[in-house]
Image 1 (spheres, helix red, strand yellow):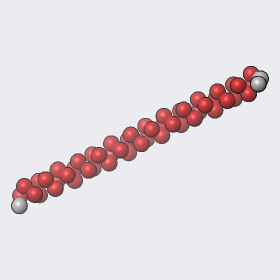
Image 2 (cartoon, rainbow, N blue to C red):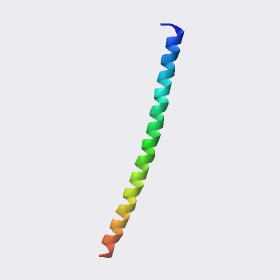
Image 3 (cartoon, rainbow, N blue to C red):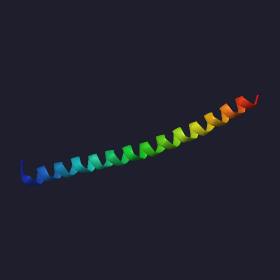
Image 4 (tube, rainbow, N blue to C red):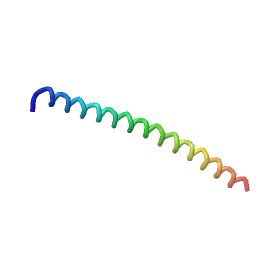
Length: 52
């Protein structure tokens, strides 16, 4: 295998890892949003239950 092919494969692996990292970061942001929303709804439910 020549150096060009090895360099190209390495570049593809790095690109794949960067994409994976970006996707994981986005998923983390989405999951955090979902948890915050769930927390708000749960707190409102608890408050409503306490009033009755």
